[in-house]
Length: 258
Image 1 (tube, rainbow, N blue to C red):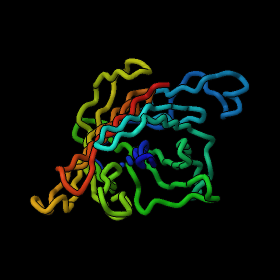
Image 2: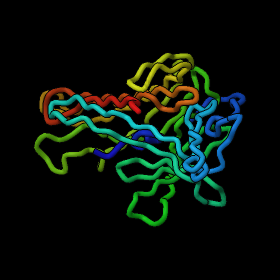
Image 3: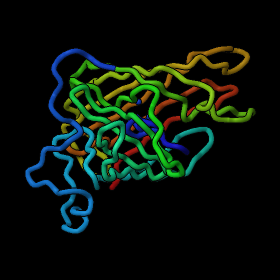
Image 4: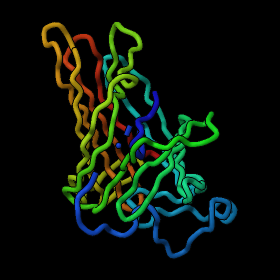
């Protein structure tokens, strides 16, 4: 299953814009006392990359593996997704960090005082990245409760029971509104216990024909993401639940394990 553009926009394929006010410094470039000069220096010198103060580390060598579980009428085996930051690449006159998804997708990000956003995507079989039609915000400044932004999203879990193609993600889109709902959460995953963490919630809906009795129904799409300082995205949840009928929905949970 293809990951959400999150975030994966930043993760996920999140599958993922803002309030007024001064932005916090950073968040994509870590402030560290001892810096390693590039990915080869990390490998040769044995200096592990640090996430510094960033809510979403984009330093070369940074890697996170997530255990992904789906609950649905149609059972699916758990998966492992690994996202690794590679060396920066030249794009549109700038040097931008690249995050590679183990399912064969590369995401280019831009970080500035406005926040963190995905600006281009490249699958492994392509030579050049393709620019996003509009920025896919991962986090928008200021990193405070109440900051909101929007991105487009698609249904990643909803399937047709008896029609083909079964996936709705190829034909349906929705506007998802994201909001920072907390800035001091504590999150536990198999990797450890992390704090402080931003809790970011996205909400959208699709008007779908679910069955002859209910007809068209507004089906909610809900994403929840936790970004922890110096660690990045540590947990991700997606809910796409539909009434019984022509469609199959479900929920997805991804946790940082190593």
